[in-house]
Image (cartoon, rainbow, N blue to C red; front, top):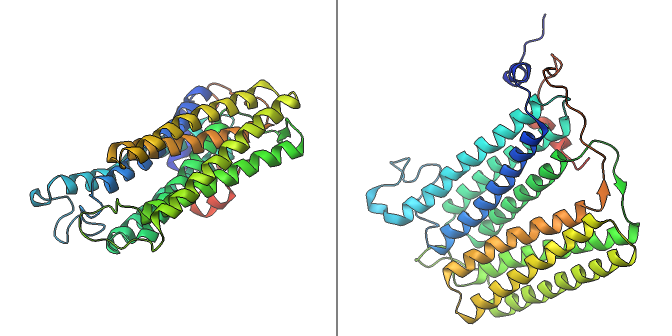
Amino acid sequence: MPNTLNPLELIARRWQPSAAFVRRAALATVVMAVIIVVTGGAVRLSQSGLGCSTWPKCTPDSLTPTAAMGINGLIEFGNRMLTDVLCVVIGVFIIAARARSPRRRSLTRLGWAQFWLVMSNAVIGGITVLTGLNPYIVSAHFLAATGLLTVAVLTWKRAGEGDEEPHALVARPVRQLAWLLVAAAGALTVIGTVVTGAGPHAGDARKVHRIAVDWQEITQLHVDFVYIVIGLTVALWFTLRAVAAPAAPRRRVLELLGCLAAQGVVGYVQYFTGLPEFVIGVHMLGSALVWICVLRVAMSLRDRGALPEGEPGVPAPAGEHEATGSQMAGASSR
């Protein structure tokens, strides 16, 4: 029985995107992941978390918001619709990565990993609404969005490098320091979700259950971890200089320091101005950018060689079917 070509294979036979297009498509997934984080924060900060009273519909009788729901319904529903835009962007990347010759399975698998993360987070978002903005589910919703951002950044990095075995650019203790920085930044993000779950911006004007911790104390712990992240970043900078590391890792650390400085200014502004919604939104954007910078620092400490040479006009081999959801688990930082 002859092999049946799936749609992605048919596209690959007729279209050969450039390596630059694939990288731009990967970057677009990063941008959309950041937008999802920020707009999700806007839903909470505008008290629109229950703008749509149920899920997957907006109301029990309507898929879309009604006039009676006002601006809150539009904001919540608009954020839901952004998931569709995100899926389109990820789909473009998957198609481009699949059509590119030579074929790189690691990229398409990472693209499918993003898709399934979006689907799972959509379900978590629905549970968030159905549970009346349970703060623990809200935290899980944000962390899942951060997971999507992590995979998107990894995909962007992989789209710009080759497939050789990773070659370390610095000694193991230096790499361990970098991964300690990643762990501290991850803990900072998790503690930030607890601050959100205990803080004054619950996501809806009605009384919403909050995490039962002292908000000021958990905020102080969050600040303490900010200083830990800054200290580790400075230590990594001096270490890279001491071992004469390549310019790229040192440049990435400087980028992180600049982002941390800007985020620190925003943090103090929101504290001394009584937590205005707009400034908190900027702070959420800053947290996403800090996480991106931290990941780029860690990934800059190894090299995988140059991109494989493309062969214009040469289609991908027939009979090689695309990765499916069951193959998503194979996505890695190879």
